[in-house]
Image (tube, rainbow, N blue to C red; front, side, top):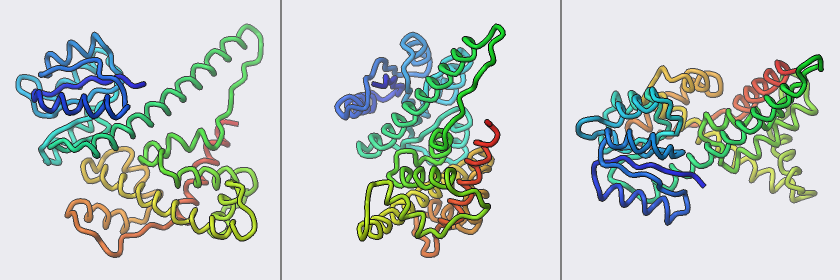
Length: 301
């Protein structure tokens, strides 16, 4: 279970956040503070996994507190909460190390959704750390004249951090994408990929469907993947809207999506108005995902 620290100068906000976290089964609150200076001290003492911190506080604001904590070796994840909508300030928060942002006034559904994503990312990070530690131990055992061996990552292990960057690691369509990419890496060596219908039905068969059920489930797979890729586009566009030079935006936006689709989605988010022509190119997304995974698999051989 994740441990949380809450830093907010508003006592009501601290209580609301603690109630949502603990009653929602999201984790345990091990530290609370009403200022940045107090928060810096108690967080270093308790070392929670996640810090939920207010942006605007007297004496020492949230960004300054995060920078000071990182300088002292604190390695927890940060979730920023604030009622301001200044894009420059939000961009500075992301640059300081904030991974998620919650808008005030506090909304229970939004808090639960964001912290659930944090929980998923933390679990994946922990799994990756355990894998890395296992590999390190294996290499140490093989030292002293023995040939060192290195465990190669599977396609699924390569996909997880990619999906985490895009903010879709917990989406149901991500599991379908994993089935398709694993199938392609095992059975398909050409530059192009098979027709989408064939790939959707391949994912359907992975769910042990047969006959007429395959075609029906294939259509369900198509819808799940379309929703997931659209969610990835929305998340990447949101990052670009707050920080155009963010490495995730610079890598994923031009590589996985059409330029005009990214621009439309950014406009839709910025103006909070639905853009009728906003869409995603599923075939391009799959093609690029497949190529990125195969490149990384080959580099580790």
